[in-house]
Length: 451
Ligand SMILES: Nc1nc2c(c(=O)[nH]1)N[C@H]1C(S)=C(S)[C@@H](COP(=O)(O)O)O[C@H]1N2
Ligand SMILES: [Mo]
Image (cartoon, rainbow, N blue to C red):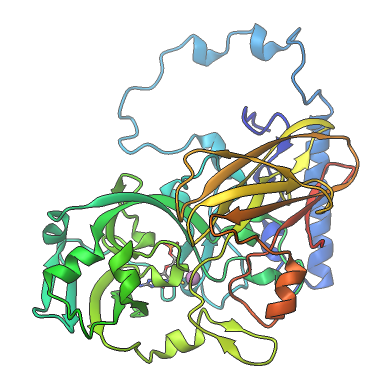
């Protein structure tokens, strides 16, 4: 058991003791009984091991007799490693469980799948680039930037083909934004389906993106101001992913980005060029961006007609619901973690809105009967993750933790039953319901639906 001074003292983060197979194997279809039994056994065995470790005092004690403070360890009496031993730094070997994870069986092949961000292990609002979630329709590529081109065509005075060098000479901006797949929390529409926040909310990441505003490129090509009503963005991967964006949004805050968290995009996230469409569902953030076409009407793309649209209870579909509505989730304590004793805890989590800034986050420890307002940690930026914190004293009894966000438009994050009343359960996309985590008297935290 490693000591993580930030969370290890009061919590056992799930990646430190749960067989990752447990978290991965519980899918919407459930488990067959044999697998379930096996997982329960391995989970119990793993928990027992933790139980033994936890028998030593978990909360800070007077340091008397603790060899870890009394004896000088080898690292205090020896020469350390030289500079640049890692020319590109990597996390500590003790942090090896902090990983993106795929949910096996979610899709038929891993090239058309998702690797989820481990939200339970992150601090602040920026997602480390190596842990940014991945969602590909036909695998990822590592494209040679010297060979990459971006074409702008359609209703423009002059079609142009840009190299990366051309683009990177233009006036750029850097902005922090979240990206959330429209299918985030998809599995939870009907019932509780996944055990941890990584799987329930991990198609969510937040980075500082650097690029040239799309408006600059459209101006440069002389787009048709009268008839140019939409743009179509196309990716260079095998899926030739295309999405339509209306012109007012394209001219507003959309970026043609090459930078992410101070360096070039990672290949998995669209290197060397991707579209950043703040507030809008991830699918519009076309990766490996190779073409922007200006048109006078939306394209009749088959993909756009069937993916990332909302199945309604009456059998109809709701389209163009592309903005990610206000949502929040408690990341600690969250499903799969265990509180190691009653007393003080910092409840922390993330809130966001595709419509602007988060105005307020309320937290309940009694399943939504009473609420207290959490502290929002600065900066609170539009269309960006916002970190919230609130003090809490656990009395050792069973309870249900929830967070509820309100954005600057006054929109209040709904309860799951309120959302179901309008949207039914046929939907996959755009589930922004309040998340409930149940704390058992044993301290174990699990995913529940309470309203
Ligand atoms: N070219 C291309 N762009 C793409 C995709 C893709 O498969 N190909 N997936 C989309 C989807 S559905 C999402 S949610 C985001 C995910 O971005 P990420 O992999 O950087 O997290 O990219 C979008 N852009
Ligand atoms: Mo997505």
